[in-house]
Length: 217
Image 1 (cartoon, one colour):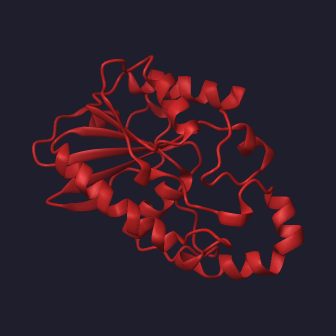
Image 2 (tube, rainbow, N blue to C red):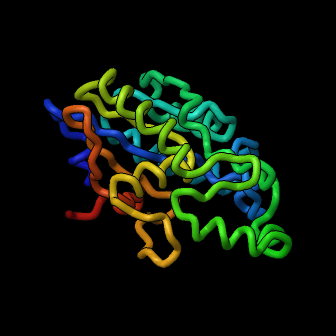
């Protein structure tokens, strides 16, 4: 796996997708969306672990959401990959969860359980009140990712962003309906690879974790 990320590719751009470190709100079960919460102690350690992993790779460019928890993540990663330039991209912000931002999932289930279930069954059209749908997230993120791939052709891009953004990209490429009965595709706190070739994106290896660095393929 590591050799795939590190190797020189003459005709493809590799995009490694990484979620920000765990935050205080993550640990409290709160919905963040466009709101922000600082990295927790556990989250900071997770990012340091990723930093050690990234130091062994040949990353050419970091592209990241401009929300605070991502910026905090990138600052830690830069301790290990110091010479890599960073571009902040508002288009990579998390899905807007509207009125539900700041709520815990437990409170949301208790007070708006029926509406939540209806939205979950909507798949790609899941839209929190006052927020944006998953389909709209894809519509703003996908064109930007393709432009970034063209701009950094034949390079290795580390894209640090959010779970909602990562899921919309990968579920789109995997042909998923975003419904709860589908088999689980992604594991939390993992690295996922996309491959850009001829203005097209395809899936690379998913669910890469630092602990697996030394394992044989």
